[in-house]
Image: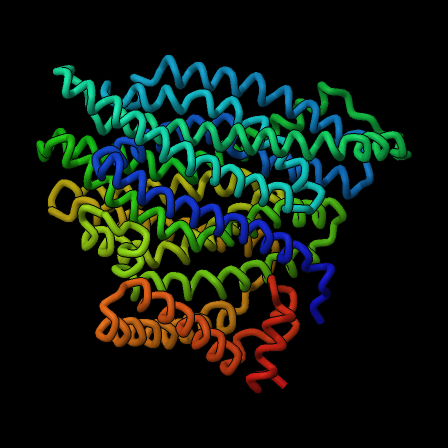
Length: 545
């Protein structure tokens, strides 16, 4: 019998996933006007530059929330409240120092990463790294307390401010550049537009940081009172804590960096081969990469729940391991894997069959919608692979196998590079090569991580109800959604009026077949977000007794 309290992490993941989904939808919505302002070339400049900013962010600060939540959760499970708070303070000093160094390095060393024309964009992004470190510590502190609400709200605020400032600043910068060109100055309008969009990234992080700091100050007295009530008598020195943080943060950083290095490596290979070997114009290369970026952002939307589940499961598994409750850890891992498969498999099928209308809805002014739709279809399978590999990456980190994801990621990078380079060199597939490489990478790391987690925890994931039934149900869903869209479009000639009913009916069909095929039982459904409501609906439809 599934215990609701024991699976509270799924509810917390649902809260964070909802925030992630909303954030990514906001990201999609503002990307469309930004793309209309700066064009595919400007979007390509921003996307390729952002990848290098992401590398430095990954190395310096990006893994902080997960690492800090794990360390603090272990202390909280042992009621060492004083040590938990000392870890929080020590972590803040750590990110202040590392974040400052990373920001200065990125600002003054921008020329080491990007072409000369794109240096100003990277310099605009540089200060954001310093801000993100402090934001990461605050998020990790609250996540360690098994509450995702604060992080969720901060993510939404971050995206709202990002959207507003990105669009506004891009418009202002493009106007400035256009006037400069009219005055006879040699100015790249696309680069200026990308610089404006980059300002929004920093503004969003700053808003999220101010919010999280305000929430901490409101709860500060409670945290300090709990420290005073600590009766364990165990007080770690700051030197000991620094060693613990370094011992946990460094493997987390390496794991996350290796896991995300693939995108930056592929960007570099794509640009070098297209510009240097095939002699394609820089503007065309950036425009094509901009199209790939559009498709990638859409394919990342369904992964929001997996990312949220990964964030929620780290402190949960770390807590179970600290208490030597391996059975509880296996139960939580099993439920987490099944839950994300129930959501990511139909998402992948939906993107496959509705790729073109989805691109048309999100990017109505896309310069090459057919190419974007084709790339999105090619990326569809990676949704399932990335969802599972993201979760298993965090599971391995949570149980202390922090070096295993690093090894698996490096193996996957070698394999996908061996696939990508020949395709780029000897075919005209171009951005499709990037999509294929993404599927290969995510597939390899998915298999390696799953095998490693199974070996470490000595657990076996049930295949039929976790993968088989969701896949079959999703096929019925895909057929229904495609048929509804095509039929309505013939009648209405409206993309949005055809797409929304197709998505809704597809979801209903998937839900019905999932229940009919016994892919999920009542207990499992109840622990999911809005699970009790779904159970009532299933019973009213006579799908459940």
